[in-house]
Length: 340
Picture 1 (cartoon, rainbow, N blue to C red):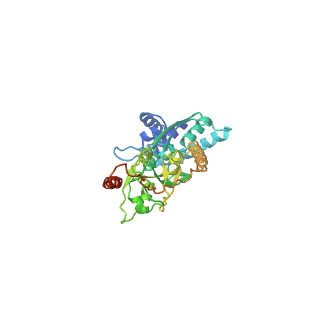
Picture 2: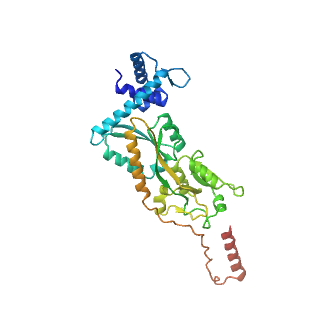
Picture 3: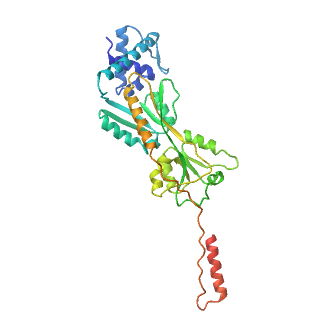
């Protein structure tokens, strides 16, 4: 008789297209997965999976039929367990793939809530850029992705979490900039922002595309590094406002008042819909709640940077006994020093 665990293993081998990926998803070993599939084939006396080296794994006709039954049985099992318990006692390991912006904002609150309400859940966090997270989810290397934008793949559920305003941020010690800043004013300095493969980078590049103002965009996969370089005055940071809230409040960064408005970015929770996705769906819903609460908190007020004020030279009288030519030469030398 085929038990629940065997059906679960078969389902994920078929769903993810490989023994290794299924083993990672189910926290077991590849030999254990392969042995289960072989036992099922021996019991049913049919081949379920075509195994060809250097070729993608495919289901046989009987394997496709079993996949249909396995999906329905596993889903029904999940519904039964939810109906028979007053409050679902979720247990197990959940692998989160997270954009770094979320790490700097509401991820700690989400983990705190999960630990308090569901102590049986163990969280594993991987931080990366959104394109890498998308690939990791499709391969089954993570269970849920908190990232920029949605994933347009079959059986992937996308839940909009929140939108973040993007701002131009600079260090107070940065080179003087007249405000409101124009495109030419921005293009005169290095722009520090997300990596080339990300949606914010592409939007920024499209927004600032102008042959008259060649840009110097310094892409970076680390938001922490972008903020650090902005604090050090290396360039203008194009960053999510929520990621620099504390720096702005403390006066270590200022938000530029600019004629060029950056497009906002939208974060989603994406996961693969499956018969055993109840725990992951719950986490996605909780993430939506936490992100919405964080978005409702007001950002620090805009602190525009004004052009620097030129201080007049101090008026000093002639030194006693000094000749007129000496005094004039001293002032002339002082002016030349200031201009240089």
